Image (cartoon, rainbow, N blue to C red; front, side):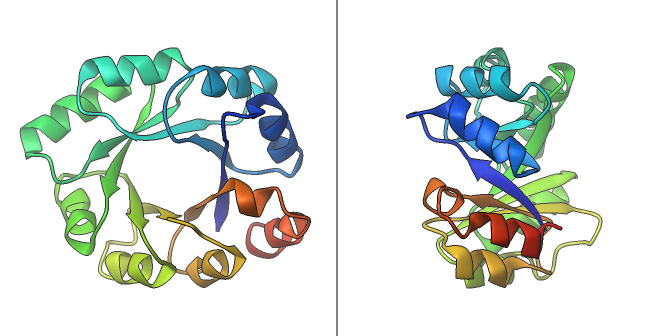
Length: 183
């Protein structure tokens, strides 16, 4: 399972450089802004995901301006709206991630033809339940709110990647977790 470090706004360049040294797969940011730009300049090769919901072209442009390589689009939008926003993101050279916050949202992501779905739930068990019936071809990124090391370990085998909050990736045990779940 790939690990994606959630970078805060306190010291984004330093966090990004440290996570890059640990060979993290990508960086995530709660919203587009200067923290994302600072981290992008510090690493240059690590992809950045903007986790805030993009609801229009201007939101996607702002995310791209700040260095996002991927943006979240609500999976439950009507198909025409989803397609318009996803195509717009792709023309900006960003990956559209279908944002799902329930099993129904995850199923909606598959129906709209998303290639990647970010499933945001309160627990690892809720994520596992939400993704159980998804097609294997769909790349699944999990964001467990208030995740800890045990929650991340539970996701192994159920999702392709997981968002790692700062409280976990700043701990002394994080390098061992990276070696364990993302060798």
